[in-house]
Length: 280
Image (tube, rainbow, N blue to C red; front, side):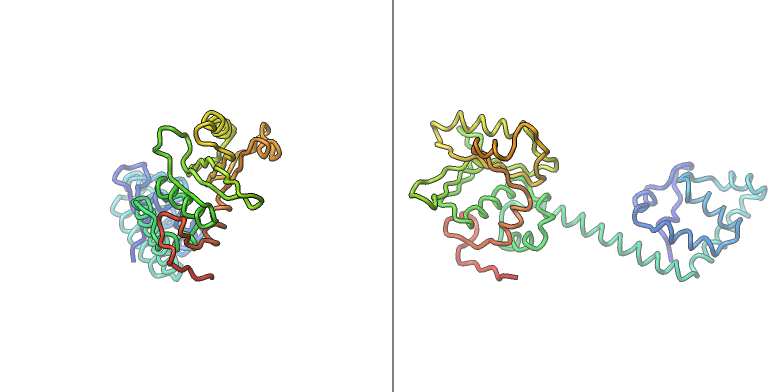
């Protein structure tokens, strides 16, 4: 039975990389329970050798001088202490906990690599995100934009286009929604922010400025900013002022709702309209 937290560094005086990496995984209280089974001298030798407590490791020679014994005695006491630890019930529990944590960490790393390598929206991806919306942040920005556009089509927008590469507009998505009150068609300038940080005043200023300068060309009526991380508290713009400016703010909660309500639409460009999603 081998424990990663009992790994000595090749550089004396520094905790090993493996130990540092797992310091948040191994339960410190459980380690203390393991050391209870040792004598005072054995416990202190293990602490000094493996940096338990102050994260500083000592050489066998340094510990020998502290206890006024030879280095061979320190090595013998170390082996004896580790044998005692391995025989405790807590040792088995700690090993299982550490192994499970390592497994979970590996799965998360592999999952992130897979999500970051995705190049297009798929049925499988949409189903996965419906169940695991916390992983939206791991999508490549271009796939995230396609996902939002597909959700807008599902919500009944008559026309949805990705225009992020169009040099004639600053919008990421162009969308048209038919008014419920009349036959007029409302044109949306949609800005997508798949940022880890919240969006602030500067983005609203930029979007509003772009809408005004492009209105004669694109006929924008409403600007919608979709921020996965949400929005900062803004004293400059109250909800009423944003409404008068024609600016709408949407966050992760809205995206999660769109995913929950998603149904394929013949207005969508990416998923087949005959695809069925069963309601949970």
